[in-house]
Length: 186
Image 1 (cartoon, rainbow, N blue to C red):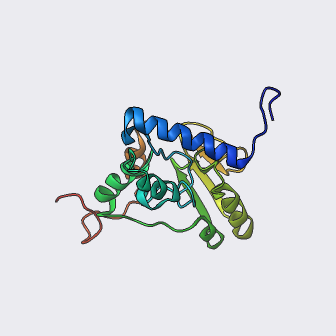
Image 2 (image 1 turned 90 degrees about the vertical axis):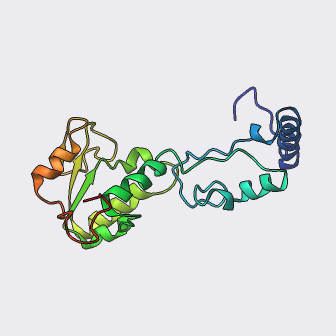
C-alpha cells in the first residue's frame, strides 16, 4: 500500500463506486459508462469478453439502464474476420496442453508470454506440455519476445508484412481449392 493511501472497507469502496456511477449517469447518460475488454482473460467471471452482455458487470449495468459496449475485443474482431477468409468460418485450435502430443510447436505471430499475462497461463501450460513431449519450438516473429526467452529451439525474425510469402514458400499450406477448405471466393 502506498504511503499516501488510506485503507477503507469494502462497503465504503462500493459506496464510492456507486455514488460516482450514479453521478456520471445523471450528468452524461448511460453512454458514459464503457465496459472495456483488454485483460487477455477470455471467459473470466467478472470481465470476460464474449459474449459481452453475459458478464456480471454487464448484467449489473443493464439493471442501471445500460452502458456503452464494445465489439469483440482488442484482437478478436480482426481474428474472426480473418478466419472467414482463411478457413471459411470460425476455427477452433487445439489447447496448449495438446502440445504434450506433439513433436514440433510453431508459434507464428503468437506471443502468449506478452499477450496473455492476466493469468491465462498459456505460457505455463505451453512449457508443461513441452516438458512432457520434448517438442521442438520454432518462433516466427519480427521481435525476440518473452515467449522465447531462451526456451525456443529456433527463432525466425521475419520481416513485417512477409508472413504470407513465408507460408506460401514453405509449401505447408492446405490447398485452398479443396472443397470446404476456404471461404475465399473462387
